[in-house]
Every structure is written in C-alpha cells, then in structure tokens.
Image 1 (cartoon, rainbow, N blue to C red):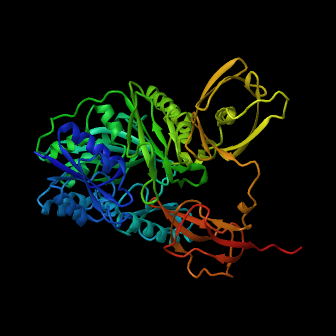
Image 2 (cartoon, rainbow, N blue to C red):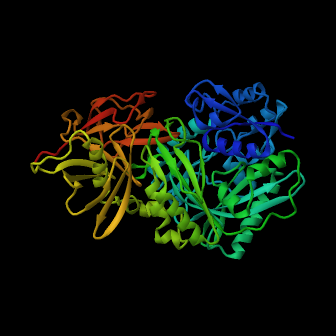
Amino acid sequence: MISTLLAANRGEIACRIFRTCGELGIRTVAVHSDADAGALHARVADTAVRLPGATPAETYLRGDLVVKAALAAGADAVHPGYGFLSENPEFARAVLDAGLVWIGPPPEAIEAMASKMRAKELMGIAPLGEVTEADLPVLVKAAAGGGGRGMRIVRRLADLPDALEGARTEAASAFGDGEVFTEPYLERGRHVEVQILADTHGTVWTLGTRDCSLQRRHQKVIEEAPAPGLTAGLQDELRTLAVRAARAVSYVGAGTVEFLVADGRAHFLEMNTRLQVEHPVTEAVFGLDLVAEQIRVAEGHPLASEPPHARGHAVEARLYAEDPARGWAPQTGTLHRLAVPDGVRLDTGYTDGDTIGVHYDPMLAKVVAHAPTRAEAVRKLAGALERTALHGPVTNRDLLLNSLRHAEFTAGRMDTGFYDRHLAALTAPAADPHAPLAAALAGAHGRSRFGGWRNVPSQPQTRRYETAGEEHEVHYRHTRQGLTADGVRVVHADARLVVLEADGVQRRYEVSRYGTDRVYVNSTTLTELPRFPDPAAQVTPGSLLAPMPGTVVRVAEGLTEGATVRAGQPLIWLEAMKMQHQISAPVTGTLTALHATTGRQVEPGTLLAVVHELRETP
C-alpha cells in the first residue's frame, strides 16, 4: 500500500492529486521551483522539496532532481500529473529503478506512444512525407508533449521553414525534445477523445467520449462529456480503436486516445499516456475519482469487469490569465480574488493574493458543471462564470461566457475552427454601461468624509475609465441628498456597494479595489485614467513594444539597424508562459533601432525595435 506520494508537477494538477491523497490517507510531497516557493501546491502538501532554479528546464523537467526529492522526503510513489515528465519513459524507468511505485503506464507503453509519429505508425497510419502544394494546409506538430505547444498551421509552402523552426524551438523549451513532423490539417473537424483505464489483470475500460473542439493555439479551452451528436456506430468505432491502441502497448492506468472526427469518420491523432486536463468531466459523468483509480491500479487492485454507468452531462471551462482580444497574450500580476458560486467544481493552483508569473502555463483554474442534460450543464456553467469574482490580471472569462452562449455551441455544431470564425465577435466589448458610474460613486464615497457637497452649486465631478479597450467618462455630484448622477437614481452608495436605478430597474454593483488604478465592478474590470494624459507616455511611431513579460528567444537572422523590412515580416520572437509570440514589422520601412537581444528578459511596454515607415514620394 502506498503511504507517501510525490506529485512530479505543479499548480492545479498537483493540488488535485493531493486532494485525493488526503481522502485516501496518503501523505503528500510537493516539488517546487524558486519561482513557486510560495505556490499553493507547495503550501498544501505535507512536505515540500525545492528544485533550484525558475524555468521548467532547470526544475520540473529535471527527472533526476525529482527522483532525489522523492527519496529525500521518504516517498514511496510518484504521480507525474500531466505535462512536464508525465510522458517521459526515461523518467518512469528512473522512478522504478529507485524502488518507487510509478503511478502511470509501463515505460515501454509510454515509449511506444510518446512520439506521435511512432504512435501513428503503430496504428497503421503512414506519416506525411515531403510537403507539396497539394498537401496544404498542413499542421506542424511536436512529436512529444502536448498542450498545443510546438504546433503551427501552414497554408503556404513559403511559410513552412519558419513554422518548422518555431515549432522545434518551442517544443525543445517546453518538453526537452525538438522533434517535429507534419500531418494534414482538417479545417472543420471535431476533436473527440476516449478516456481509457486499464489494470494489470487485462481489463480495459472505455469511459465514454469527450468533445474538446473549442481550442486556441491548439490548446483546449472548453471540454465536455459525452461528445454531443455522435452516431451509435461512430461511438462504437471510437471505443474499438481506443481499446485497440491500449492493448497494442499492454497499457496500464489512465490514458486518452484522441481523434479528429470529420465527415462522420474518425481519424486517429495520438494517445496521451497520462491523465488529461479535462478528466474532471469524465469523473462527473461516471461518478469516479480517476486519480484514486490510478493509485488503486498502481497498487495492483483489479478493476471491475465493467465500468460504472454514465449519468448526465458535464462541461469544463479553463480560465486563463490571457487577453484573447490581443492575440491571446498571457498576463501576469497578483490574483487578488478568485471565488466561484456553490454548485460547480473548481480545480485551481491559486488562492487570493498569489502571483501569476511568467514561467509557466497561464491557466488559473478549471470550472466544471454537471447536470442531467447538456443544455442544463451549459447554462449552469455559464451562470457560474458570470457570477465568479475574478480580480487580477485580464482573463478569458468573457470569452468563455460568450462561447458557452453562442448558437453554434449550444446546438452542438462546433469544430476546431470555432475561434477562427468567431473570435472578433466573441471578444467585442459588452460591459455593463453603468459599471464606470458605479466605480466612480464608490470612489467618491470613500473621499466624501473629507468634505463632499457644497451649498453653492458646482460643476459635476468627472472621472474617466477604460474597459475592454473603450474609454468612458462619467459625471456625478455631491448634494444634500447624497450622490446624484444624470439619468440614474443612486439608491445606495458606499465604498463596496452601489445600487443604481434606471428606468425603474434597480441593479447592485459590488466594487473592489486593491490599491491600484484597477477597479472591479461585478464582472467588469476598469482602469481609472488620469485626468491629464502623461506626455511621457507618448512613443515614437513605428515602435515595437513588448506586449507581455517574457524572454527574447530569437531575432530574425541577419537583422541589424539600417535594414529594410516589409510589413508583416517576423522580426522578434518572445517566449512567455511556455508559448512563443511572434512580433512582426508594422509597416514597410527601415529598422532605425534594435534593442532586442536573445536571452533578454523584458516587461510589458519595453521598446524592442523601431521601424521608420518608407513613404512613396508623390
């Protein structure tokens, strides 16, 4: 029996593993980088071991250090979670060689399926050879790892070399393996997967299907179980192929077989030899704890001959610290508050006051809703997200809300091109028009005790706010009757709560501030703007500013000051939160300044280069 378990991962998945361990009476060990010294997973574990350094390559990807940590802390088992070392056969062997229990499939099974290229060959699928015009579009894909890293869509042959290089660099950074390959890219396919669970006694369960079609940068955003709209014949085919893949490598433990479904046919993508981020939807539908089942299987217990029956429908949304309207740019800073309503499941690696840094994936949490029907589950999740208090960096919460309520999604007709078609509409500003006024009134109340109203009538006080890229100017007055605003009756106003009445309808606004210029009003985030713009904030036309904190990992070959560049030409690549972001020339012109150098750490707004536009003379 396992008594002490180390989670070879961080954040949300480590916390989720520790939660199950606590229920089973198993002691827990966390590993953490220097950047994660105060992280939630390190705080909730019974024991924590430091891995010196900050980047994944220095810490969480160092299997030798993780094994040493397990031995030093007296652990007798290692659970890899997902990502990082979870699909590394050499790490699995090192764990076993150290006399520890490995909570995962045999190293040989990981090895057989770890490379997506070799997995396809094992399933009898020939890899795509030299790419020609007739093959386009294609997808460049990292052979190892997952999570959308090391993937690029190529629609023009001229773009293929850059896509290959970018994918290799990103994959090497994220997984320690820069091998990539190409495969046909299906424009309107659905991403469907089958959860499997196998024991050491020859039993293989298939636990229904999941639909993970809503993706950004090939990383899943919203997932659900079961996948809607599949025919009985297609479901049988998916289950048969999943069992075939598991038996082909004598699989043991939890795993996922992934497919692209198009034109009623299933196309094998890969087998993930680990737990998936979206496993909670399967747990909700089948009433299982998959981590507990993984531990039982690792202890040698047999599975029942048949899995439990599925009940209802579950939907999961991933909350990311990112700005979908600005190219999914990751965001950093303090997470002041994260609180979801009762009735939904929250899996997270953060608590109020934690810092979101630059080194790791920007996922903050997963919110999961389960209900008897799909429509009820979707409505429940959307309602919960709408009422979630989320104070801190910009997130994708509004995008998730709009996605769940989009007609294409509610009808179950989504595919992997959903965000390509609808992103602009889904990220269009739609904040409550009275939120800026509520922010102003709450702020005014906080200062009113120093002398608010006067006997002599005066001009209204004015404040300016920015939200979702739009500026709002609001006006209000202090009177004997309290605070007033044109067109809106102020029913109540204090520093935390404002109640407004417009057209006979009263609405409540909870207002929060955390000593910054940001104000959080219900689910709207506003930035208070200065009355007079700072002249120093002006930048030279053609300036290329860092859109996020990160590291310069590449500068275009041969790029020097004085060079002529064309509009749209890739110039600089930043890496932030394990993803690469390309910065291109805004105009055709001359590069008059270049401050970016490989390896340089930059903050948002850092000047990287300046391009002086070449204008044609009349």
